[in-house]
Length: 291
Ligand SMILES: [Zn+2]
Figure 1 (cartoon, helix red, strand yellow):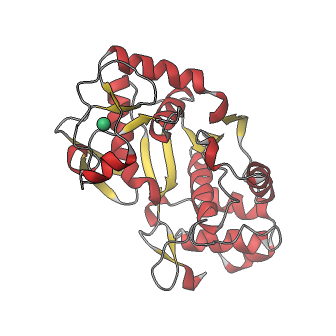
Figure 2: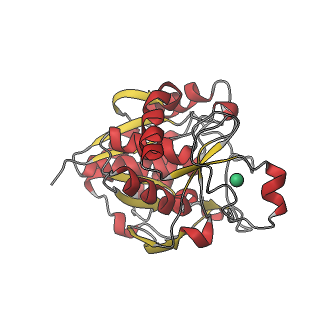
């Protein structure tokens, strides 16, 4: 048995909100209950989307809610050489090709699935994106909340981008390389990334990396069933009433914390949560109306 290594990997595109807290708490409890490590990685590989001050707010929020991490914080923006190594490896194995389609070219195909136009362009060229060559092959994995998932990438995304035309590495490649190099064994994250998992497993297999365990935490939806996110204006986590919010988070994660915990400190609430951690009790949907 390898030791448990978990991680929390927020993008600094805005402050943490209630949905991010759910994922952070679930990931933290799962790691601590297994006596594992919990790493913090700032996913700022897409430097065009970074919001000023967001990293500081994320770090302060985690400290405030008692979610301490192990080791140094890792920043994707400082790891481009590692992503380049992986890209070179994939290039050498001819798993990628170079796509010069413009956004308009892609739109003209009328398909959300890449149609394979540039598959014969095997050498790197300027202003081109690198795409993974995708084969007809079903990818299955067991998610610890949503059950067995199966996806056939040639029918959902087609050949997907791992290096962008603007010279940035794509999120999919960065995540896979980082999880591998950091020795991550368990990925606990928001369900908005559930449909990214098959692409990441595909990449892991092509790069010869092991596949971690996956557990996706349901997204918080409002009374209209709309997903709560930075885009829909979810509020930044407050720095007051943190015990109560943590307690509510545990309720929403199906953990049934006792009422009297609400008047305790965040440390006491979290240590109760670790001692009583029941990942099997996490529901598949969480409604904001009950928050
Ligand atoms: Zn193309």
